[in-house]
Amino acid sequence: MIKIKMCGLTRQEDIIAANEIKPEYIGFVFAKKSKRYVSFEQAAELKKLLDNDIKAVGVFVDEDIYTVAELLSFGIIDIAQLHGNESDEYITALQMMTEKPAIKTFKIKTNEDIYAAQKSSAEMILLDAGAGDGKKFDWSLLKNMSRPYFLAGGLDTDSIANVKLYPYLYALDVSSGIETDGYKDIKKMAAFADAVRKEEKS
Image (cartoon, rainbow, N blue to C red):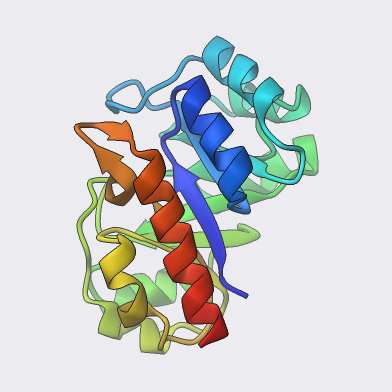
């Protein structure tokens, strides 16, 4: 079954909606340049409200490894998602420090990017067009994937049917596609999850 990750949650009402919809993952963005940025303190309070069956993912860009490890160790997040230039050495060290999984993000433009993603030492990988800007890359490149991956970029309720054909798709990671005026829209969140689950049954 394809998993769902709803990223960029910032408010209590976002968490309450997620608890009802039950995606497998939600995301807190710790990159200060992002319009979806939350502080560590905000994330800690939101995590207290989150259903225990939903994994909280922290999104980082070239963050100090000890800061990431601390958030994982304290249970503020369950998984680290690395969006910067973090090396395999960084990922391996983080795994040894925390025994928690990491998701490494790769910007996909060519087949070479696909091959690089497949070699990552991270437990999970995420394929995106850019830095969380909601744009879609050439999804035909996904036919060359040979390990499970999260897919992000250009996802919304209408695009679900177009991504179901590709092998090794593990999870769909949506953010701007479930927003209205820059905030999470509960109706769009529910509609996205419903669309994914209906495709699974079809």
